[in-house]
Amino acid sequence: MKENKNLYRLIPKVDDLLENDDINKLLNFIPRKLVVDSIREEIDLIREDIKNKVLDEDNIKERIKLLPKLIKTRANRKNSYRLKRVINGTGVVIHTNIGRSLIHKDVMDNVVEIATNYSNLEYDLEKGTRGSRYSHLEDILIEITGGEAAMVVNNNAAAVLLVLSTLAKNKEVIVSRGELIEIGGSFRIPDVMEQSGAILVSVGTTNKTHLWDYENAINEETAALLKVHTSNYRILGFTSSVSAEELYKLKQKYNIPLIEDLGSGVLIDLSKYGLEHEPTVQDSIKSGVDVVTFSGDKLLGGPQAGIIIGKKEYIEAMKRNPLTRAFRVDKFTISALEATLRLYLDEENVIEKIPTLNMLTMGMDELENKANMLYNLLKAKIKHDDLIIDIVNNYSEVGGGSLPLERIPTKCISLKFKNSNITKFEKYLRELQVPIITRVYKDTIFIDLRTVKEEEFFIVVDGIYDALKELGGVG
Ligand SMILES: *Cc1c(COP(=O)(O)O)cnc(C)c1O
Image (cartoon, rainbow, N blue to C red; front, side, top):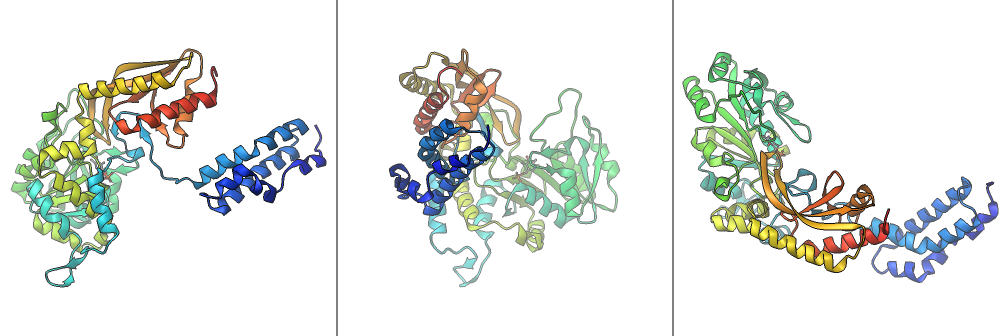
């Protein structure tokens, strides 16, 4: 086919397209610039196809007829937020890629109150002078954990860096080889250690570290013993590690601080709710650890934050470290964290109002009910010969590097085609206006009811309906 200059004349002008009813309506809720850009981009695509001799006259006319729809889709996409809600059908409760912990509306009410008004963020109301932003969280953290002092930074990675930089710069820190972990997103203990200026002394072997391994490594240059919770993996079989209680003996004997990076930061005993026992922050402090660090948005179920609990002298030294200014939390974090921590004063509230814990402790009865509800809604709306919808048993995961071996029995909706391609369907669900993120195993899509809220069911049903309509019957 040769390039046909006349074909360009078939392309409508931008102004004419703006007069088109469907496109004109867009201007009511989409900024004009985004609509015009969308028109230009769609027109450019046609021009390119003509230039590259991809389209003949009939194709062009067809494409031009479709223009309003294409422009509408493009403009809507431009007008939607880049960071947006998604439906978590994966059953991974603390999923770092899709936002870790959800925050209850009651907690957000406090954030709205603080963010839309002035606050005593760094103002001492009693003295009428400058105050400290850390003061709002310190008392409640002490009350809940039993620690002496506390502070909060942006995330646990920053917390670990700050602790090491404050207590061990240019000095040695002893860590077990079995605990030199990497957490997703490039947090590696050896790298953090290097950044902090501390010198890593690793002891023991990958599977076994004994108390005497630590003891042999202690010298005048030793600034601290570090214990890292191997949150996202376990070495099974012929293993041994040294507990915080045992390390406490060494710490006493040689008078060196003992630091523990707990990672997840559980504040209640999850074994009461049928989950594996994960050492709590309180356990760690009781066993005599001097400084404990953990995340705010993993099992604690609050906003992104790094919480440091420890001996007063160490926390005071950290507050004076210039890094603290760089790692400081803003008022959103403080207000969300304070409201979340308050829930911990009454354990019943915790399970009800902390979505992460609510989802993790959800019973089989509730999961089964939810599965039946969603199944019935799907069956009522979706009539599709090729699609098999079922309720199946499966396992959810805690995620966020917490309780790595824990597989929690759950109920899922499974979607499977007799003939069509599941990959295309899964991709379509992911790219919906409200994306539905699912788990795919072999040729089946699983939607785990543990992480999908009841009020999201209609979004899921409509999403699946739209995807099937768009992709046609058998692909
Ligand atoms: C998750 C984790 C971190 C990093 O915490 P962030 O809050 O994600 O920065 C550090 N150490 C351990 C052991 C962890 O599990």
